[in-house]
Length: 176
Image (tube, rainbow, N blue to C red):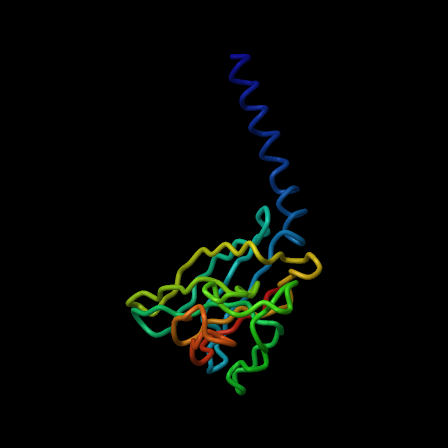
């Protein structure tokens, strides 16, 4: 009986601290990004979590070309103007190395904002978890909060400059 009470007390004590820890971490350790399509309508959401030496990005985006690979990047500017084809988001985020080239296969690559291609299912939905060890949410030089996540029409060839020959920008989200 005493052992059972100790376990219950421990569980109750632990449960009461979880909300306090979660709310303390939410402001600096997490971010969200709501994707919009070229028509300006919301198409999905990403949750970003600071995780060790990098950021884990979990996302679901709908309305994309079906059954294909698409490029996924962090862009420099937190602006998603669909009227301008999302060009307002600027180039890929280079991070601390301004001389970095685009692509995992480039001699001086990758940019901090380069990430692996993502697969869109036959329902037009991209569901992914991506870890990027080159960025942070808020650390100077590598911070992506306030920048944009971008999904392109084609896969990234991981070598062509400046953007991997990945085609039009289809969906954009500002990291908040």
